[in-house]
Image 1 (cartoon, helix red, strand yellow):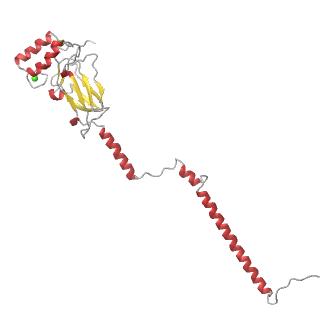
Image 2 (image 1 turned 45 degrees about the horizontal axis):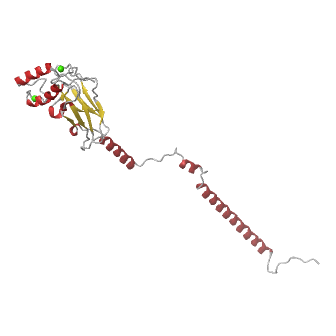
Image 3 (image 1 turned 45 degrees about the vertical axis):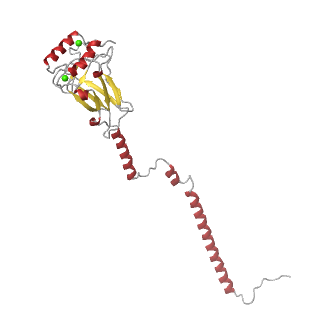
Length: 254
Ligand SMILES: [Ca+2]
Ligand SMILES: [Ca+2]
């Protein structure tokens, strides 16, 4: 026996049609919702993935964000301060004993250098701090003051900013511009116009001939090639420099 599907008597065809439309609408809303959730999930996954073109661009060195101007200024100031730290200030530097004598005293340095020709250069910056590893050069720019072949006139300062030279040589240069100069890190820190020596005749040996010329100036009291401290007269203070050089017979032997 066949049983027929029947609706209650109050379910009319019009009600069935309206019910069907409601179900279709709910299905459409559900489908759109699922599609939106799927899209969001996919988007979130892309943002955190290294396969994302944006992530690759951010990670690449080709993308450089603009520097913070305040950071650049601080770095530039630090660099400038470092440069100034290694910048010699002539007023803060010392070249002794030439600073006290008013010029260089050259003397042959064998068998032993006399104190007046041992020059210590101290390099400092404008804060008075010593500059280590500064490159220092002494230049004699006049042929009237020859140096021994073993004389080295360039050096590097130690941690105290000091470097010492044996200024081996002889001769006499008076009131001549740029006769002697001292430079540090390329900056001229001293210029001297007078170069004197117990070896006044510049044969690179202090001998009897030099004693004769020294004695002549000493007796006259006039300043000249043996006025080593450049005070205008050849006197006892100059004799204290000439004496050791003459008694040792200093020369430029190796
Ligand atoms: Ca001589
Ligand atoms: Ca003098």
